[in-house]
Image (cartoon, rainbow, N blue to C red; front, top):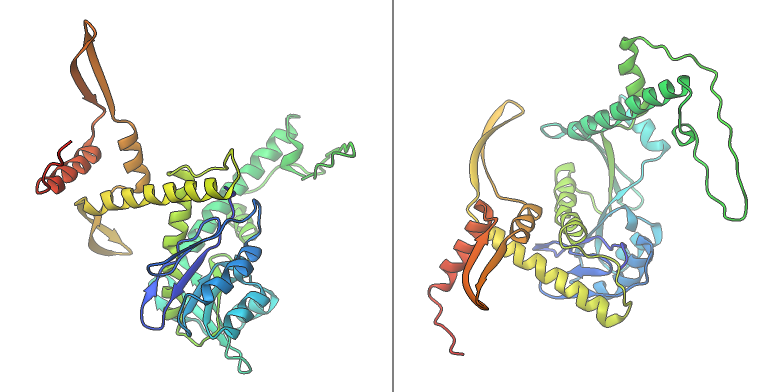
Length: 353
């Protein structure tokens, strides 16, 4: 199974549904569309292959939410020609930089920590949204800060005579040629601590905290952001299939093995989701942006799998006969899950064997 993905969200005119795709999978309300694609198939190729089948399964006028892998012009045009609407994340360009710097184009308030600059093209009705997120800016800042610290360390090691060339230059490998690169720097490492913030801002760039969405329809910034956020469940599932469920490249590459592996992975995800749904969770009060609110937290999928995966059963055998069974490695998560299973089975009559 390759690591390719087809990330789609599908919404009908009256009811929203989340896309659940991975390696050629898309969920549309009840039916599930699954296609086997060759390894290393690019995202645009997957969209072009799967969208015609998806168009035949959804009502006209449905919303299709895609990530930037499906933002190619021909793909978006095919969605509109088929009578549907799209919302996608797209790359920013020079005109967006001008719009960000334009004082006449004001930012619209969306929610706490989020604002937007919206632009609609009169000829087509296509609308673009430049969202500034304070949380995204903080993430960008911390990432740039770590990059700065690595750069400082690289310069220091260079001055000490011990350094890696890869810290300063990137060389592409060519099996037909031997390439040797010599690195020399004409600099003396010294900077004022007060310059740190300015250097970090330079690393971040002018687009820090900003991302761009594009829609075939004129939505309010709040509507566009909510629709795009709804596809987050797709990304969480893809992450879980790879990291938790352990979906990996197959030793036997065939249609049946691909379908069987994917089906087992989805059944595992379903079982974990059902176990998590039955859990009560812990209620606690948190403070967010100066406001206190009560939230209920449940263990994530990875914690549940780790807890169940470490349960052990030890059989004590004496004179060839099993004398005692010892269960170990129980914790609150596994105890609650098995407690819920016993409660669910109490009213079910035993099946004679």
